[in-house]
Image 1 (cartoon, helix red, strand yellow):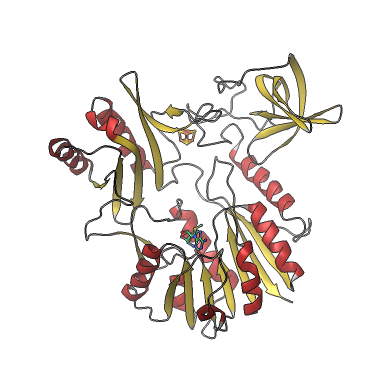
Image 2 (tube, rainbow, N blue to C red):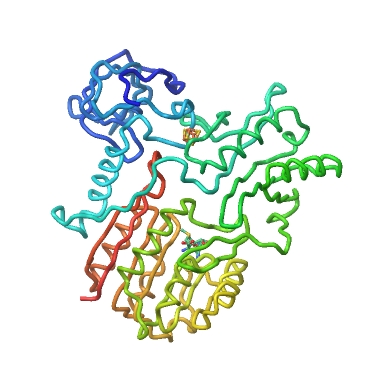
Length: 437
Ligand SMILES: C[S@@+](CC[C@H](N)C(=O)[O-])C[C@H]1O[C@@H](n2cnc3c(N)ncnc32)[C@H](O)[C@@H]1O
Ligand code: SF4
C-alpha cells in the first residue's frame, strides 16, 4: 500500500504566486501541511510533516497564506498511496495519504492541543478505534445529471461540485455493493433527474435506501424501483417533494446495542459507525458507572442511544432531545425494552431550562451535543450540582470551551479519550469525564 508518488491531485484553485519550496513542520486537523517562512505560516493541503514540497500560493492573507501542492520533493516515510482512487477529488476523506497509525497519532496530538487548558500534557488520553475502512452504516449521496450523465457521489474537496464515484471504501461492505448496483441502475434511468439525494443505510434489520424526490414520480417508475429493491434485498423509502420525512411502513428500522433494540426512523440521527458506537457506549457505562442510586440526565439523547443503556443500570433516567419525533420513539424504545425508569422530554437545550427538569436531583449528567456544543445549557447543569458529567463530543473545540467553563465552576477532568469514529476523515469524537471538586 505504501508508495512514494501520489498520482492524482485535486484541481488547484487559481495560483497567484510563483512556485516555491516549502519545508513542512506540522499538520492541521483537516490535513493541511504547515510551513513557516519569514515568520508567516502557509497551509498546504496534502503536504505532510517532514516533507519538502513545491507549491504555489493560491490565497494570500495578512496572517497566513494558503498554497496548492505541485509536487512532493522529499517524501515523508508516513505517506501512503490512498486506497480510494477518488481521494484527491472527493471531500469525504482527508487523511488517506497518511498511514493509518499516524492518522491516529495526528488526531491524538491535535486533541491534546485543543484540550490542553483542562488536561495536562503528561496526562495520557485513552484511545478507542476499530476497523479503518468499511465502517460507515449510513451515507447521504448527492445526485446530478450533467450532459446526460448521472453523477452519484459526494461534494468535492476544493469545490461544492459533486464528485462522481464508482466505489466508496468507507461504506460497510454490503452498502458498497448496494452503491454499485444503484449507480449502474440509475445511469440509464429517468429517476435520476427527479432525485435530490439518496441515503444509504445498514442496521440490524438489514439494508435500506431512501430516495429524496424533487419531482413527483409516476407509478410505473416507482414499481420498477420497488422491484430493483426486492432484487437487492434492500428496503426502499420515498421522501416525496412536499414531505418533511420519508414514508415508513409499520415495519420499523432498528439497531441492536447492549442487548437492547433501538427503533428509529431512517432519517433520524444515529451514530454512523456501529462498531465504534458499541465501544463508545460501553466506555460511557464504564466511566460513568451508573448504579441503582443514580438519577441521570441524558442531554441531546436522540432515540436513547445512551439513555437506554443507562436506564438498565440506574434508578432513573431522563432524556432530553429537540426533535419531538425522536422523543416519542425514545419513549417507545424504553417501553419495548421493559425499562419503565426512562422518561423523555422534548426541549431546545439552547433555551432556558424548564422547571420540570430543574426540580429533579440528578446525580450524573451525560451530554452528547451537536458540533455547536452545549454552552447555553451549562449554567443549568451547574445549578443541578451533579457529581459527575460525562461529555461526548464531535467537536473538540466546543468541548474544550465548555470544559474550561465547567472547570471554572468547580469541576475537574478525571479522564478524557479519543474515539476514532470516522477514520480517514478529519473528524474526531471525544469523551471526557468531569467530577465535582
Ligand atoms: C450528536 S447527536 C447525539 C444523539 C444521541 N446521543 C446518540 O448517541 O445517538 C445530537 C442530538 O442532539 C439533538 N439536538 C440538536 N440540537 C438540539 C437542541 N438545541 N436541543 C436539544 N437537542 C438538540 C439532535 O436532534 C441529535 O439527536
Ligand atoms: S468518502 Fe468514499 S469515495 Fe470519498 S474519498 Fe472517502 S472512501 Fe473515497
